[in-house]
Amino acid sequence: MHVLGHLTVEEFLRDYWQRKPLLIRNAWPDFEPLLASDELAGLSLEEEIESRLVMENGPDGPWTIRKGPFSDNDYQQLPEDKWTLLVQAVDHWIPEAADLLQNFRFIPSWRIDDLMISYAVDGGSVGPHYDQYDVFLLQAEGQREWRIGQMCNENSPILDGPKIRILDGFEETDRWVLNPGDMLYLPPQLAHWGIARGECQTYSVGFRAPSVSELAQTTLDQVLRTSTEDQRYGDADFRGQTNTGEITRDATDRLRQLLMNALDHPDLLGDVLGNLMTEPKYPEHQPETLDDEEWPAWLGEVQGNAVARRSEQARFAFREREEDVLFYSGGQSWPVAPNLRPLVIWLTNCNEYDAEPLLEWIKNDTKAQNLIRVLWQKQLIY
Image (cartoon, one colour):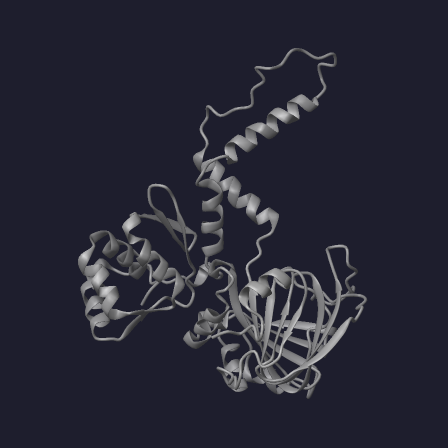
């Protein structure tokens, strides 16, 4: 489904992506929410599901935030207005929510983070704020007014007191009311403020945007795995200096070159992205590895069903090399023979896999069977 309205993907990427906001009226005609509001609240009662309640006038002061899991009693004590429930990573638990994200794969799928659903009563909001990532805000039910403001950064003033980051100063530049099916795209660091008009649900499709510190840590881990004791600081070009205690520009240039040489490995930076961007959002919720003895029974189940599915919590990516293809998931990688490239593309592009071609791959190619078996063992497909 095309969700960009009258724009082509090329026009959106050229003119709006990470540049400026875009309002798309009727982006999703006749959209129906995947969950009723009480079902969404039911998810917030579960221990393993990340949820938050934000009250503009809470018991602990303005912009009170509480983390789930919640209880029925918690909801009975909420005020009549100006509160919001946020349930994170709904796509991890609801297959239909994972399928919804397929419509945003004009951006690389390894960049997609999750689908958050917010339910708000009249006046409900999380205050004026900004995010460090791109987001598509799809109105699922009711109406929400969105106010757009200034571009922000880490030096933008934040209110003292609240435990959530509320901007101290909001410079409004635009205002729209979204109806079901309307969608708003916001680039990173743009101030925004959504306020519910009556009860409403909004779906937020967010994207992974690792910080330099996260990328540096993962890169360092990769360097440590590939470096040897023989790679050391050296200064064969040293020709003496007047002040023996001085760290000269030549010395720092040598260090820079040493580190650049350590990064100059064809696989290193690809592995940084592949491993980091497929890491599970909630590592503590990863299932146990299945026993090999269960493999024949699973093949029988596949034969009896129309489709197999990717785990809703799994992220797949791949990278081509001269000699093979690297398949990534769960922060790990597996080298795959070049002839399996069509299989890898199929696995990474889709959430569902027709049983017949899947079984054909398993039956006709031992290496394909090995890859699918690993994914099954780790419960990345089911």
